[in-house]
Length: 377
Image: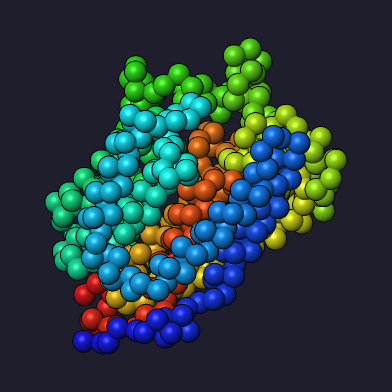
């Protein structure tokens, strides 16, 4: 059995370029959040910088602990995550949904941490399973995913709840589940989404209004104009009025974003687009693509099953969140509570992003261990 790496060896072998990219994106987020909160009573930029420091420390702490030990305790993390999700239902706070709880003077959003906990839990559960060609072997990962999905949707937070499903599909695919089984899961998920719309009482009023606003963009319906239809229109206007190289961080951008709700959090991307223009957005997309490629490269280089599944799950976590956030701010998807990784304001989101990054750095620092002639043999 291969010896465990020392702390010095682990830090020496880590992919510091990947960490530097994550840190660069987070510092861009501090700039954007600071610009978005200009003139407001709270300096969210300063708060975001504080969370960057905390997140970086957490990332290095995770790097110091062998990831196999983290995976071995997966059911402990899973139980703690479920406990926090249940606690939110009783003491949660928020505008349209009670998503946050107060812990030691900090506001924590358990659903954000639960995304990463699910990746760890699934990676540990599936790492040495054999014969996934039979659908009955999918029962445990499906049940493990379904419980937090239902708890998060109960808050209610439909967008975050649905986020667990792409994570499940990505990890199952990396574990060798056959395409027909994955396709059946996708179809079942789509049927459930349709059921949410047509069965009375499953969707809250504001959630139904969000979907109607997306489907009827440009409508002159007074209710939609006063709510999410207006928000989509404002978001697209803020993006579209930014010149090629942007309006900068001065008065022009402040005037353009003045009427945009949640511009420091879920709608930070339109602020970035207006301030830095198409050129800046192109650079941002390249940074994200490079970041995702480095995550995927780590997954492809690792042969130890739980390490590869961890890296794939984290890749899916960042990829889906970035895609959904940008798409919803451009009116291509309904508005959901989905932050842009490293950019949007949010302590729980930023902390989770750095914890996830620390796990991938940890996986990449380990020596390549081959258990068979092919993956998951």
